[in-house]
Length: 132
Image 1 (tube, rainbow, N blue to C red):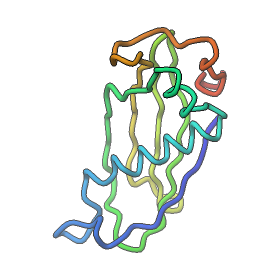
Image 2: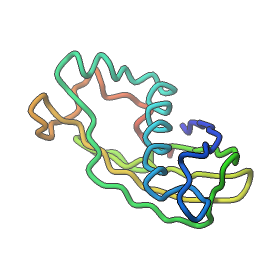
Image 3: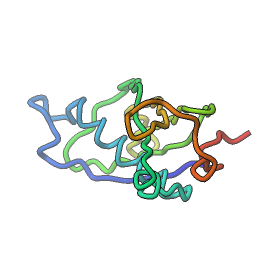
Image 4: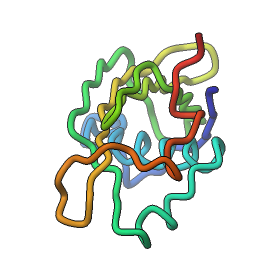
């Protein structure tokens, strides 16, 4: 399953060159991943209440084109890999049909101490699996 999240670039997200600062893309990707988890029915709040978390272990971003103030961007998120403890979500940031940036985000399920753990059965959501 893939989920889409849209945002309009705001002036304060742009740098002195007039385009979105590279660090701002991390915020866009994070919000889109949260929306992806909601779309697949993953209960993030219940996982936190049970003493678990989903930590980001690695982010790879390929910047293709700049985005500017007022641009409407759509972030498409979907799983590409899942193991017993961790997985990878691929994300694309698009302005219409144009690819602005692509990312691969590695996540890990952790306990309350931040140590990686197997995903408990009650949180092992089928939406985290890549489509065959």
